[in-house]
Length: 345
Image 1 (cartoon, rainbow, N blue to C red):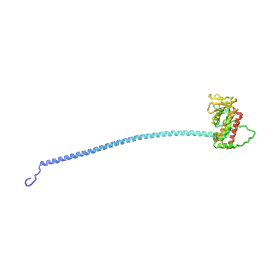
Image 2 (cartoon, helix red, strand yellow; image 1 turned 45 degrees about the vertical axis):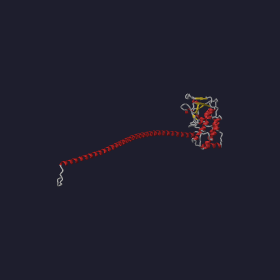
Image 3 (tube, rainbow, N blue to C red; image 1 turned 90 degrees about the horizontal axis):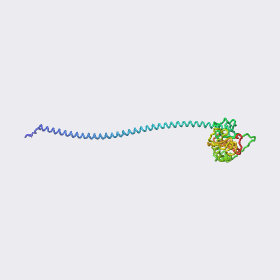
Image 4 (cartoon, one colour; image 1 turned 120 degrees about the horizontal axis):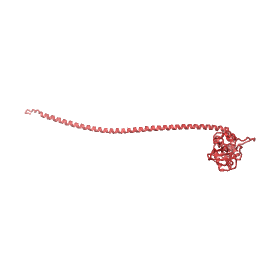
């Protein structure tokens, strides 16, 4: 600038320098911005990677949970199918068993109904006072007995079964008319027993009959065997066989025979024995005389009749039943005294 105060114009070199300075400053700033942006992006990238790793772990965990649940579901489904199959099989087996049992029960019912019907018919057609000879082969004459033999050649008579045991037969008619008078004490004891009939000897009715009739009638010389006979009669397990029909080769060789055809096993007396007895399932046979047989059958007849009363098969009034019991008691007394029908000899 010269004396007049004029400004000297800037030279071209100065202008270039200024431009370079400005350009360098911009470059520095751009570099700083890029570095700072790079750091920010790097931080964001690291954060994103961390978040991605967390999500990967969560996905892996969820995948494991899903696999475990699927496995448990498969096991549960298989277990349920197996259990259901087992239940179906058990139900089928139970149903088959029930049907089989039902058929068996129905068959048993049919058999029992038939037996009851036959037994009722028997009660109406055969009583101790008037036995049916078609139902009692031992009461028939020797010429007609053969039609009633069993396959083994024996005529067997249980002490009480679907038919009466060995019966002394129908009494011969007497020309003397017989009157009777009821004993009020005996009748009261019978009525009390009849309310709840049983074979328990503790009742006054049976206790008296045991004391006055049964025990004396079955009291023989061989007391031990007498007790066994009484027990067999009470238990419905006594069998009487005619010797003439049982003394065949078909008799069991292991059976032990006591007494003999000419000696009674109960009384020990020498008598012609045409019958023998067997007690329950024992293998021993005992020969008995006609008198001993009459005594045993008299007791058997009594037990058979009171069993019929107990089972509700006797359709008579109380007085008729009482007099039949009295008649059977008289048979035991008569047999004890040694009297017996000649057809037993």
